Image 1 (cartoon, protein in one colour):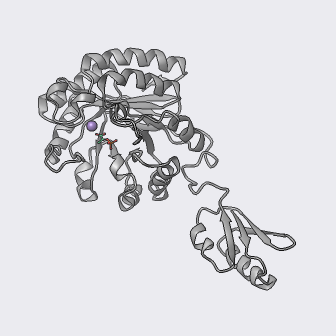
Image 2 (cartoon, rainbow, N blue to C red):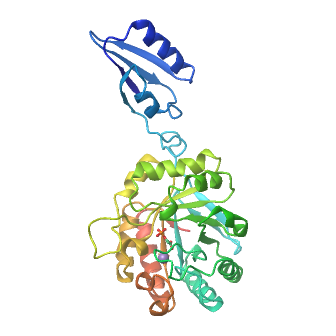
Image 3 (cartoon, protein in one colour):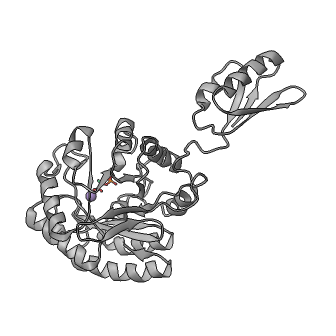
Length: 342
Ligand code: PEP
Ligand code: MN
């Protein structure tokens, strides 16, 4: 961090200011020009509040050179993080660190037959995880909002029937006690900056699938991950699920550049949600291939046995048969990228 001091500030005041900064655990280097003094802060500046410093009466300008996130930063941990979950099927399912995780299932859990049969179909095709929403964030208060606790029970039945670890969204912390047997907790795009939720999930011992908010920058996503990691939970999976742009043909715009950008800045696994990005089922295979080619560590795909009758997101859901085809393609593509399907 670099701090430019206002012109004309007496030296003893600057020394006192620097001494206070050093109390916060950083070293301060002086660079005295003809008319201005510049301070260089060396060390861990993540805890230093740049905004508060900018408002200080001696300060002209503050420039951050270090990223504001540290635990999520690749500079702190150069090797890829791999999140692993032991399935009831005896297999260890992994995402990241050379393993490509495939999460598949319906947007929302609807009935017992629906979730169990989709779970069996995606398992047979080679998926590593089952998804399904029990608590659904919907734009309209009049839409289907999921089966709630009953939906979680049905998801657990599907987990029992297939052994697949389950991924499902938590919308508010009061429901956390219902999530004991859930393997991966999803934080949806709309909650990416629900900081009190992120803080609490930092204390929880389960992997978190953190979806990018549709107007969030990479730094904001990484800072959201940092909230979870600061609480002691390092198992965070980042998810690019499309952002808002001026284009209306697709539901969102898949930001493919998010994959290399996030992977360069962070060691955390990055997966892609082609279903919510495009909103169109026929685009899912193409975007999944693009995700692999760009270096993603996995995909989360919506699959429904009867998309026309789906209670939520039917237009973007692929059938189990299309999913089985997609898995064959992913096998080839991940091999080309030197990754293993997990
Ligand atoms: C979902 O995965 O069902 C979902 C609602 O996703 P997002 O938060 O990315 O919109
Ligand atoms: Mn959905």
